[in-house]
Length: 114
Figure 1 (spheres, helix red, strand yellow):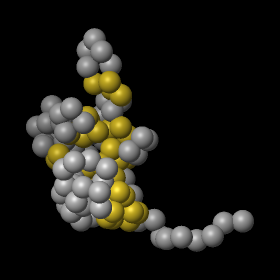
Figure 2 (cartoon, helix red, strand yellow):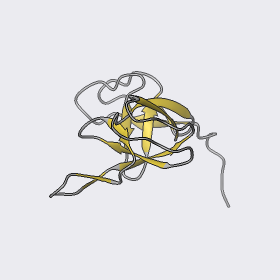
Figure 3 (cartoon, helix red, strand yellow):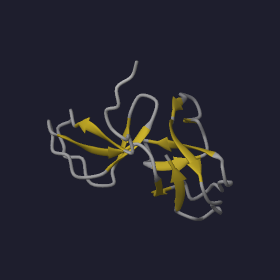
Figure 4 (cartoon, one colour):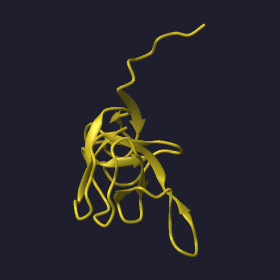
C-alpha cells in the first residue's frame, strides 16, 4: 500500500551546508541533480525542482544532440556529455537528464529536462 505525499515536481530539501543555497542553484544528490526553487538558508528546508526543463550553463566545447544523456561536472559547474571528468583520476559526473534541444559547439547553455 502507498500513501500519496506530494506531486513531486518540487520536493523538500534541507540545506546541511554552511552557505545559503541560491535560487536556481544546482544541488547534486547521490544519483540526481535538483534545482533550487528558492533561496534556502543553512539549516533551513526549502523547495527544489525534481523535474522540469531548465537552461543550464554548459560545456562550450561540445555539441549535444536532442535526447542525449547529460551530466553535471561539479568541478567546472557545467553540463557535459561525459559521464566522468579527469584524464588520470576519473571523477564521476552526476546525471542531470536529457537535452531537449540540440546544442552546437561554442554555445554556453543547454536546455535540459531533469
